[in-house]
Image (cartoon, rainbow, N blue to C red; front, side, top):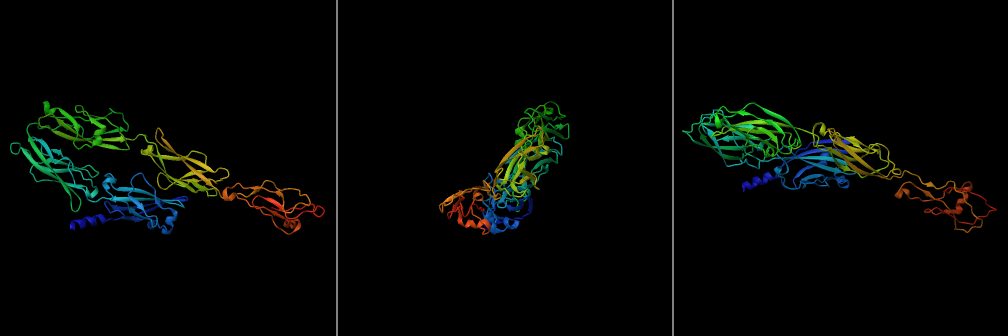
Length: 538
């Protein structure tokens, strides 16, 4: 019962903090908020109130369409559009959604429409101690010559813990014995490799076999551990280990180097004679599988060659453990690290992403109005990853860089006129600075919406027409016509006669006009002897 209570409490516990950074671009806006939660919190756990942290009015959220921009993966979070609170959609396993790099950051994009705002929300998934250290084997056998010198080091298999940081493996413990002490080498990224160091001369006749126990302990409270049995078989004779000629081996290698390229050659010597001095080169037992997939070492010459695809974007360097072993009956082995640094070449084109877009804009919008927000990314590094964005066509739009790197706003740079051009296809070009240059294009269509900025125009002015005297009252005597360059309701026209009582305009009381089609009707018959001419205004 108590154990279930602790587990439930652990499932409910979470902590979060936030940091708000506002980044405003012309008429569009962007902001960044950071929260943190523990993994394995229950679904519907509150991550944070985005609306409150941004100072947004909750009453306007629903009308303005506040939402998370959908991604390509299963959503881990959802947003309440009524109050702006961010919730956990399902239980999150940090080891499932992130690799072992720390911190584990989930990037969300939220958009608030009318006016357009984009907010970046970063949620850090905090690790909890839910994994124990595990060795790849339950037992490890070592064969060590009785002539091995004090201080000799023997690499052991490292344990693995899916947790990170303080919950990963913090130390190793060796069972008490009089022959060996434990030394641990920190290889970074929560990777510690244990070594047995001989501290007392072995004697096969006294102790031909030793049984040790190595325990890996993490930093949780309470701690979790895993263990492996180490069986040491003490052998005779061969009493000299190979010695590498150089203290340190390093080389550089361009990515996309062809298969068969020789990267570096290692060389070791052995003071023994015969088979005990013949050396075989190999990778160390703890070499990562990704190294084995792209490199090989010649067992006889020590040449390291390329056998797979070298990609700078996947790995910028390789630290390879090399072993030199003699051919004695009890082979002696010496370890050496080889550092290979990968040099980037320009093999990736920039990627353009439209993060937010308003498909239409009013023709009377002010210069500098934002119609779209874009982001660019190039997987290369250095000059190969530096991207310059331009707009291809001669259009009344330009790119305004954001305070956030590789973010741009597409804004108006001159006045729009729907009556001249009602739609623009804006093509954005992203070019990197590499050699050769790689580029990408993205086209967005912007529709210019109408505003009532044109007056009706008569087909003729003035109009001159003739009426036969004794005309029939109520009959049409003439028609006027006007047109408007605007569209929809802005182009609808109605007609009326200006009724001014002075001068000739007093005769307008005898006229009427159809407000829809401009037909002018005479309400009485005219007499040439009484009235020969008159004018009026429509």
